[in-house]
Length: 451
Image (cartoon, rainbow, N blue to C red; front, side, top):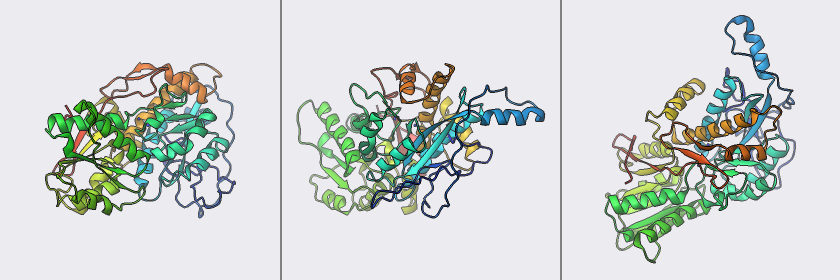
C-alpha cells in the first residue's frame, strides 16, 4: 500500500505557488502548497511568490568537510532540478490527522534524500493539498497540481472514494499514482494499470487474515461475525473482503454477514448501534472497516453492552489516533481491540523501522512514530529508489512513463521490513504481508500472531 522538498535546516512550512484559477462553483478545495503541511487557512494566506523555474542541474560535489567549501556545496545542491510529487489528503476536518501523518512520513524520506545530496541531478519536492476527504473536491486539486505545479505523480493520496474520483484523469494524463492510502481493488486492476502502484496489501487480504484468525485461532463460528463499515467504497471494499473470506472458509454459499454502516466524515453511529442491539443471536466479533473517530464512537457506545465482544479494524483506521481517542473516553476501553497492519510494529527493531525513527527524530523532533507515517515513509523510499534508477542515465526525464518503467524494473527488493517486496510488469503491489497488533491494558499496541 507510501520528504519535504524544502531544505530541512529550517523545517518550517513553505508556501507553494498560489493558484490563480478560481474554484468551481460551490467548491472549497484547498489549493496546493509546498512544504510540511497543506495550509488550512486558504483564504487568509497572502499570495506566495511564483516558484522559480528549474535550473540546469550541475554535478554534486562531495559533502563539505570544512567551512570553506560548505557554501559551494549548498549552492550546487540548490541548483538541482526539482521533481515534484503531489499529496492530496484531509488536512482539516474529522480526518486531518491522516493528512498530517502522511505528509510527515513522505517528507522524512524526501528530506533525508535531499540532505544526502539529492537523487543524481534532482531534488524531490512534495506539494500538498487539503480535500477534506471529500471526493467532489479532489479532481480540481489533481488538475491544478498537474497543470500548474508540474507534479509527475502522486504519492500517498488518502482514501478510496477520492481515488475513484480522479483515477481516470490521472491515467489519461500518464501521471504516477503510487501508494494511495487505500486497500480497495480500485487501484489493483488485473492486469495492473500502467501508472498505478501500491506498497500496501488490499483490504481483502487484511480482512481475510483477521477472519481466519477469528475462526481458526479464537474459535468463532462464521455466523458470529458482523461488520461495521463506512457507507462508501472504502467500507464496501472491507465488507466484500469479509464476505469472500467467510465463503472460502465455509466452502459453500451462506447468507452474508450483517453490515452496520455510518456516513463518511461523521461519527453518527446511532443507527449501527441500534441495528446491532436487535441482532439475534448476539455476535461475538465485529470486523470494522472504519476510520478512527467513528470506530472509537462505536466501541464507546457498545462496549458496555457487549463486554466480551472482539473488535477488529483494518490498517486504514489510523491505529495511533484510535488508541488516543479511546484513551480519552476512559481507561481500558480499547483493551483487546485488534488492528491489522501493513507495516511492521513501530515499536519494533527492524532495520527499516529503526532508520525511520532516527530520521523522524531529526526532521520532526517530538513526533512519535505512527503506522500511517511509517507507511508513507516506505512509499516514499520506493519512489526515491525508482527516481534514482532514472537519474542513473544522464539526461533522462522523470515522468510517469519513466517512473513506471523504473518501478517495474525493481523486481524483488528488500527495504529491511522483514518481508521481501516485488514489482514487475504483472505485479504492481509490493507487499502481501499482514501483521497483527492489539491494544493492551496500557493503551499500547502489542504484536499478536494471526495464525
